[in-house]
Length: 80
Image (tube, rainbow, N blue to C red):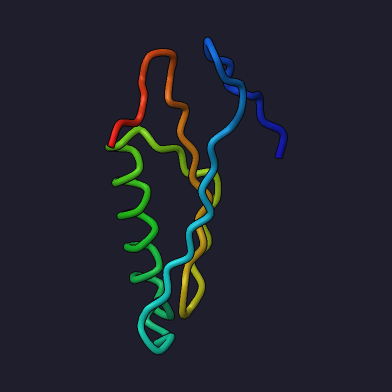
């Protein structure tokens, strides 16, 4: 996967997160096709609402993996 780096006033780079969700005891709750689609749709909808780009999303029977990224823009900063 070739990506262009984000260039800002004092930084150059990418921001990616790899997230894995697992239910307790690894129940096979995503075995049904409707649950797989529902989980993927909910994650994509929440990511879109917050300006997060979903680069990859894979839903298996007992867990799911996702690769997310966000371009913070020229004047947006994360404050805590």
